[in-house]
Image (cartoon, rainbow over all chains, first blue to last red; front, side, top):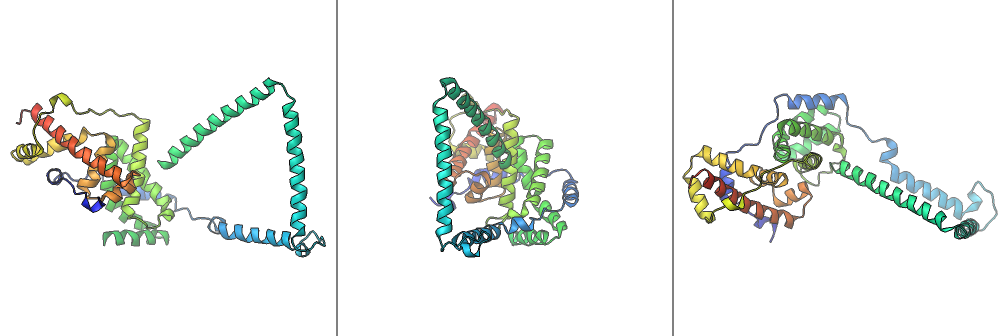
Length: 141
Length: 189
């Protein structure tokens, strides 16, 4: 069934024909205009309007700096691509080592040291969920 | 043509002619207020909701892309604000008493209605609409009074097109039941 096929019931339509929409108070438009004129429409900042252009341009510069280190401020004499691989390798290794150490320390703790942070995390998650859903409802309104 | 006027005035406002917003308020305030009133059922609250919705619409006018009619976009803001208000302030409405519903056919109900004068008819239908839950009452205003299309109602309410159709079908049945009940109660039949 297409939307066009949905026709109003003729009898109900006829009965409601004389029911006019309700009107707000006489100074309704004036009150709104007073409020509106007091605060002009917020114009988006230059930064907000060009956020994607800025993001792409910045990303492009960073990629170029990583890929062609000869142009970079770091001054390393790497061939194209090597600079990126060097730093990626260095930092991924450091992050992996740090994570491994943290996990091994965590594994050595007693049961209570596990339960307390997990309980706190669950509580925080519930609070965050409530706050987020309330905000979402408010925004929808 | 009127929708084109709306777009023209939106462009004027975005170009800095804030006074053009008065045209949009004047053109849509009655229906926007009716939607809010049907949902919250209190004139003061409805007026406040409608006013806030117009100001909100003005502030976010840049996000109106013209993909739908301006009225559809505005009524959606009003509808959501009013529904939100009813969630915060639970309103009670009287459901139809099933025991008082007779077994007249729809044609018989219409025949009986035709024998009443216009004022009585108007009272009967208004009362029947008031017995509907708030969101359904707003659907009646949009579909029967404003002659809004099912697709636009779907955009305003956020319901799917098929859901709107189902609701309108049920509303029609409820209105007939309510009118029959009123006639039985008032011994008009």
